[in-house]
Image (cartoon, rainbow, N blue to C red):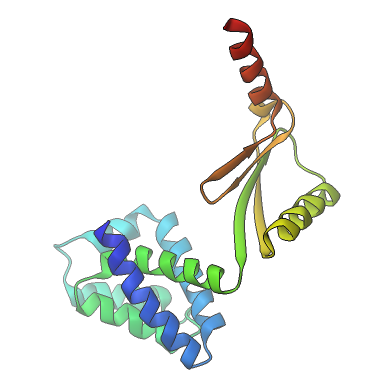
Length: 179
Protein backbone atom coordinates (compact mmCIF):
# COMPACT_ATOMS: atom_id res chain seq x y z
CA UNK A 1 0.00 0.00 0.00
CA UNK A 2 1.07 3.56 -0.66
CA UNK A 3 0.52 4.49 2.99
CA UNK A 4 2.89 1.79 4.16
CA UNK A 5 5.63 2.84 1.72
CA UNK A 6 5.34 6.50 2.69
CA UNK A 7 5.23 5.58 6.39
CA UNK A 8 8.30 3.38 5.98
CA UNK A 9 10.23 6.11 4.18
CA UNK A 10 9.67 8.66 6.96
CA UNK A 11 10.17 6.08 9.70
CA UNK A 12 13.50 5.00 8.23
CA UNK A 13 14.71 8.61 8.17
CA UNK A 14 13.55 9.28 11.72
CA UNK A 15 15.07 6.00 12.92
CA UNK A 16 18.46 6.89 11.40
CA UNK A 17 18.34 10.39 12.86
CA UNK A 18 17.32 9.12 16.31
CA UNK A 19 20.13 6.58 16.23
CA UNK A 20 22.63 9.24 15.20
CA UNK A 21 21.45 11.64 17.94
CA UNK A 22 21.37 8.84 20.57
CA UNK A 23 17.64 9.47 21.09
CA UNK A 24 16.30 6.12 19.94
CA UNK A 25 14.61 5.20 23.24
CA UNK A 26 12.91 8.59 23.51
CA UNK A 27 11.67 8.53 19.91
CA UNK A 28 10.51 4.94 20.43
CA UNK A 29 8.45 6.05 23.43
CA UNK A 30 7.05 8.95 21.38
CA UNK A 31 6.08 6.67 18.48
CA UNK A 32 4.35 4.28 20.91
CA UNK A 33 2.41 7.20 22.36
CA UNK A 34 1.52 8.46 18.89
CA UNK A 35 0.34 5.05 17.71
CA UNK A 36 -1.71 4.34 20.84
CA UNK A 37 -3.33 7.76 20.87
CA UNK A 38 -4.31 7.67 17.20
CA UNK A 39 -5.53 4.07 17.31
CA UNK A 40 -7.70 4.78 20.37
CA UNK A 41 -9.35 7.91 18.95
CA UNK A 42 -11.52 7.70 15.87
CA UNK A 43 -12.06 11.47 16.12
CA UNK A 44 -8.31 12.08 15.93
CA UNK A 45 -7.98 9.77 12.90
CA UNK A 46 -10.85 11.60 11.17
CA UNK A 47 -9.25 14.93 12.08
CA UNK A 48 -5.91 13.88 10.55
CA UNK A 49 -7.57 12.64 7.35
CA UNK A 50 -9.85 15.63 6.89
CA UNK A 51 -9.01 17.73 3.82
CA UNK A 52 -11.24 20.54 5.10
CA UNK A 53 -9.25 21.40 8.23
CA UNK A 54 -6.45 23.86 7.58
CA UNK A 55 -2.80 22.95 8.09
CA UNK A 56 -2.32 25.58 10.81
CA UNK A 57 -5.24 24.20 12.82
CA UNK A 58 -3.94 20.64 12.54
CA UNK A 59 -0.46 21.66 13.61
CA UNK A 60 -1.84 23.61 16.58
CA UNK A 61 -4.04 20.75 17.77
CA UNK A 62 -1.31 18.12 17.38
CA UNK A 63 1.16 20.34 19.21
CA UNK A 64 -1.33 20.70 22.07
CA UNK A 65 -1.89 16.95 22.22
CA UNK A 66 1.71 15.76 21.88
CA UNK A 67 3.90 18.83 22.47
CA UNK A 68 4.52 18.34 26.18
CA UNK A 69 4.20 14.55 26.03
CA UNK A 70 6.96 13.89 23.49
CA UNK A 71 10.36 13.14 24.98
CA UNK A 72 12.35 14.02 21.85
CA UNK A 73 12.47 17.10 19.67
CA UNK A 74 12.89 14.72 16.71
CA UNK A 75 9.31 13.52 17.16
CA UNK A 76 7.98 17.08 17.38
CA UNK A 77 9.86 18.01 14.20
CA UNK A 78 8.45 14.94 12.43
CA UNK A 79 4.93 15.93 13.41
CA UNK A 80 5.40 19.47 12.14
CA UNK A 81 7.04 18.31 8.91
CA UNK A 82 4.27 15.86 8.05
CA UNK A 83 1.55 18.41 8.75
CA UNK A 84 3.24 21.12 6.71
CA UNK A 85 3.64 18.71 3.78
CA UNK A 86 -0.01 17.65 4.06
CA UNK A 87 0.92 14.10 5.04
CA UNK A 88 -0.44 14.00 8.59
CA UNK A 89 -2.79 11.15 7.66
CA UNK A 90 0.34 8.98 7.37
CA UNK A 91 1.33 9.47 11.03
CA UNK A 92 -0.05 6.06 12.13
CA UNK A 93 1.92 4.36 9.35
CA UNK A 94 5.11 6.21 10.27
CA UNK A 95 4.74 5.25 13.94
CA UNK A 96 3.96 1.62 13.09
CA UNK A 97 6.92 1.33 10.70
CA UNK A 98 9.25 2.93 13.23
CA UNK A 99 8.14 0.52 15.95
CA UNK A 100 8.63 -2.45 13.61
CA UNK A 101 12.16 -1.26 12.78
CA UNK A 102 12.94 -0.83 16.46
CA UNK A 103 11.66 -4.32 17.27
CA UNK A 104 13.70 -5.92 14.48
CA UNK A 105 16.86 -4.05 15.44
CA UNK A 106 16.47 -5.05 19.10
CA UNK A 107 15.27 -8.62 18.34
CA UNK A 108 11.92 -8.07 20.03
CA UNK A 109 9.17 -10.48 19.10
CA UNK A 110 5.57 -9.63 19.96
CA UNK A 111 2.75 -12.08 20.35
CA UNK A 112 -0.75 -12.57 21.70
CA UNK A 113 -1.51 -15.54 23.93
CA UNK A 114 -5.20 -16.36 24.18
CA UNK A 115 -6.43 -18.89 26.70
CA UNK A 116 -9.74 -20.10 28.12
CA UNK A 117 -8.76 -18.88 31.59
CA UNK A 118 -6.18 -16.49 32.96
CA UNK A 119 -2.78 -18.15 32.64
CA UNK A 120 -0.78 -18.35 35.89
CA UNK A 121 2.35 -16.19 35.96
CA UNK A 122 4.66 -19.22 36.28
CA UNK A 123 3.17 -20.85 33.16
CA UNK A 124 3.36 -17.58 31.21
CA UNK A 125 7.01 -17.23 32.20
CA UNK A 126 7.73 -20.76 30.88
CA UNK A 127 6.01 -19.98 27.57
CA UNK A 128 7.94 -16.72 27.19
CA UNK A 129 11.22 -18.51 27.95
CA UNK A 130 10.45 -21.28 25.44
CA UNK A 131 9.76 -18.74 22.68
CA UNK A 132 12.86 -16.73 23.56
CA UNK A 133 15.01 -19.88 23.51
CA UNK A 134 13.56 -20.93 20.15
CA UNK A 135 13.87 -17.51 18.48
CA UNK A 136 16.90 -16.01 20.19
CA UNK A 137 15.00 -12.75 20.71
CA UNK A 138 13.13 -11.05 23.51
CA UNK A 139 9.49 -12.13 23.55
CA UNK A 140 6.87 -9.63 24.67
CA UNK A 141 3.46 -11.18 25.00
CA UNK A 142 0.03 -9.78 25.71
CA UNK A 143 -2.64 -12.08 27.06
CA UNK A 144 -6.32 -12.41 26.34
CA UNK A 145 -9.02 -14.64 27.80
CA UNK A 146 -11.53 -16.36 25.50
CA UNK A 147 -13.73 -18.97 27.24
CA UNK A 148 -14.78 -20.35 23.82
CA UNK A 149 -11.39 -22.08 23.60
CA UNK A 150 -12.62 -24.47 26.36
CA UNK A 151 -9.02 -25.22 27.36
CA UNK A 152 -5.45 -24.89 26.11
CA UNK A 153 -4.31 -21.76 24.32
CA UNK A 154 -3.50 -20.12 21.01
CA UNK A 155 -0.35 -18.13 20.41
CA UNK A 156 -0.19 -15.64 17.56
CA UNK A 157 3.23 -14.29 16.57
CA UNK A 158 3.25 -12.07 13.49
CA UNK A 159 1.27 -14.02 10.91
CA UNK A 160 1.77 -17.43 12.54
CA UNK A 161 -0.86 -19.04 14.76
CA UNK A 162 -0.01 -21.91 17.08
CA UNK A 163 -3.30 -23.49 18.11
CA UNK A 164 -3.28 -25.82 21.08
CA UNK A 165 -6.86 -25.19 22.15
CA UNK A 166 -9.42 -27.84 23.03
CA UNK A 167 -12.03 -26.24 20.77
CA UNK A 168 -9.67 -26.60 17.79
CA UNK A 169 -8.99 -30.24 18.68
CA UNK A 170 -12.73 -30.93 18.83
CA UNK A 171 -13.23 -29.24 15.46
CA UNK A 172 -10.48 -31.35 13.86
CA UNK A 173 -11.92 -34.51 15.41
CA UNK A 174 -15.38 -33.70 14.01
CA UNK A 175 -13.87 -33.19 10.55
CA UNK A 176 -12.00 -36.48 10.73
CA UNK A 177 -15.14 -38.35 11.83
CA UNK A 178 -17.34 -36.82 9.14
CA UNK A 179 -15.12 -38.00 6.28
